Length: 525
Image (tube, rainbow, N blue to C red; front, side, top):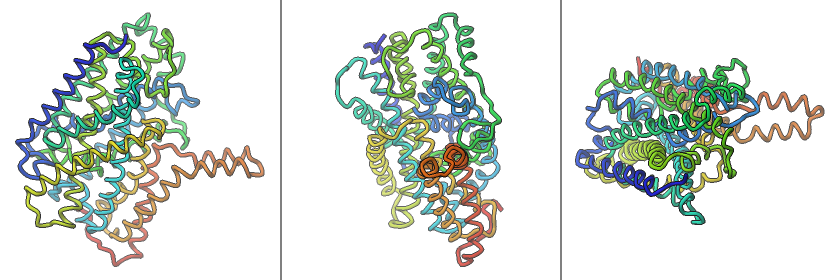
């Protein structure tokens, strides 16, 4: 059907409205603590929904339906509901975080997640972990901004065919508009716009599902028949294979450790937990968010299955660059006018929510973990607030630049998760050594983190070389290739678990050898 003037009006109203709404929070930002933690008077339910909106990027909204839509050689790679096994781990992790990490954060009256490591090990450990966060968050968020640009490119190409660099203009539009309200309104603007954006993208997704239900001939019974024939409803696999991401074991173990890292050590989400009134409300917020996420992923996967059935009846007339474009293409080409604009606004809501949270957390870590303690410990609140705003702008420019580079990095969904997974292992290992052990000290933990990071990079980027060498030079290439592939081709869902085990093992062992490093009681003791 194409993108009409009505659709553009709906989209522009959303973009203008959410930006103006966020800017309205500027007056409440009087101190740097207000800018990064708010007034600590926000309902835990609002914060819980903000957590969900923050972890839901355009990667999720377009990548998860694409995951269910696609066909893979193995069911454990996707093309069905097996991703829900990972979501099970997400819920388990939130319960662990509520019992293990949140009490430590509130006992220390912390402003960033990495101050916990400073209290336990020392400044060097805090600086190392915060540096890893800044690097990881910038790279991962750049991928997410690029994912959002795919959507806007699809919209603009429908009515502006032949216009060059649509994806680049898309990146700039998403980045600049989000930067405006994050720059002005701080964390309060981020949290409350998160709530609005969550309502919009969940509502838009439900609307898209409703339209699909009525567009497919025969409705749900026809969709179910098509999906069942293709094995789309499979949601569990007890196969133990490190090379595929979506098995019960990878989901339960890998998903648990991934979320323990992302929600328990990443400033992006720990910052939400620290804005709660007290420890109890923070615990309720994190646990509730897990069940909202379960509903959300089930909805997105269902949309992917419905798209699969729809295109069985109405095949694509143009070839898409990747499966990630299937949902945006359906929205623009097949939905009625007005509804198409609303659903595109929903995808923008997911993109802007995640980006605004990343900008604020990157700025907070830069100011509170580095600038103030290392360069200007005597800086006034007024000076720090000004700097925080300008650093938000600087990080916005950096993320736009990374998004441009991310256009050549492959599947947006797996690329974004893989970047985070490489760094989360050493970070979670350091936090666990801090809250669970007495022996671990600064030197041992820092060496453990560094060693783990090197090993995880090797696992990701160099094990394909081992498989190539095995195939080329082995005496019995078939048998040898099978063995090497089984032991070196490791799916991203295992990265955090493997990294955490390595970091804890190396860090704990070396702490005994480097007794001169700072050591103290576990921070939860």
